[in-house]
Image (cartoon, rainbow, N blue to C red; front, top):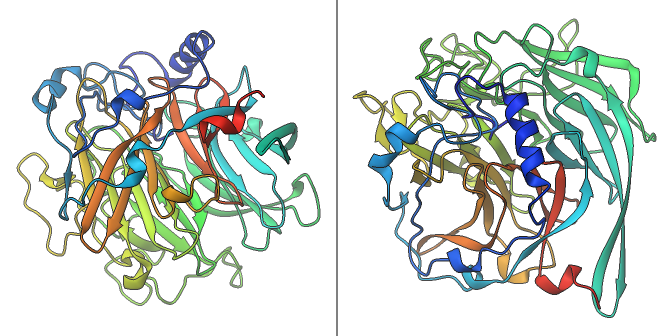
Length: 464
């Protein structure tokens, strides 16, 4: 779940994650990467993995999903600098901000993969890859000037019998309608196909199982690059990210084919239209044209392992997992339509570089930022723009990371350019599965070892 992408050639994703969970039990839940913050441009050295991409493909012969898949190819990227498509901003104040990860919940035998909040409550909802959604009841109290969190968890929905976790499959995403009345889930079913379902949860603490309504189903040709993230935009429409269908190098050419939902982010109105389970928004780029699927909002993505909308201005941010050379972050401002109809380049482009000698597509929208895969970094985990209150200095900074290295970055766009820096906190290697955003704008980290952690100032979780 991408970052599910590059695991090990012959090892299945489930076996690898079990092993990682065992390793995680010996690791500290709170880590400090203060010695990794850079004062200039970020430099990386990573491999190639991403939970949203168990690449039996990418490993071509080695690994491809959450660990060291690109060892053979990564040496070329060793020591290479990250790149942006805008000038570097002066060193931002937030790059030296002390942070830590505070454990708020732990699932010893589960794989948390996505987190969402629901309108009107402080509770958090966590999707487990196996097919279970848990509600974390969060209570915030303040004492001695410190905010403390107490939690309890309850199951909201269990669809394990409908879910397959083969390859990069599983329950991969969840979202609530803007009014909190409906719960949407994204998963791969027992045949390996991607499915989006709706459940009624109005005025309840559990989903109404009998209310299940299937909205969308997409055939998956391979067991990797499912994408699977879902989120509502400020326009009230549901956005769904699909990878290119898998294998290596996009053999079916789905990324550059807007007539398929694979390799794209689609947008639908969840209200039924007659016999159709959803409606096509009139502003979709191919809604009135024959050269693309009506549902497609933008295309040219390889495996979008987490995208999000800025809760303040609606800007769209996408973390797209690369093949062997580059991981990328795409920035699509709301002021210009969030990239409606945009071609993000795959499989002609990987990051800002041509892929295997291809020509750059006409109208290609390049990423704002990319970084090389190497012996450390290899599978981007997209995040969120920070809009909470614990870290005022981080206001407006996009926080994301890399599954393989566990490095967490901040990325900020300003009038005078772009700043990309490592933050002074990190996650254990091969565990940074996903980020989540609470209703209060605070950010959470999900680790494959079963931990849910909140990004906090050092004193926030300290003992008196």
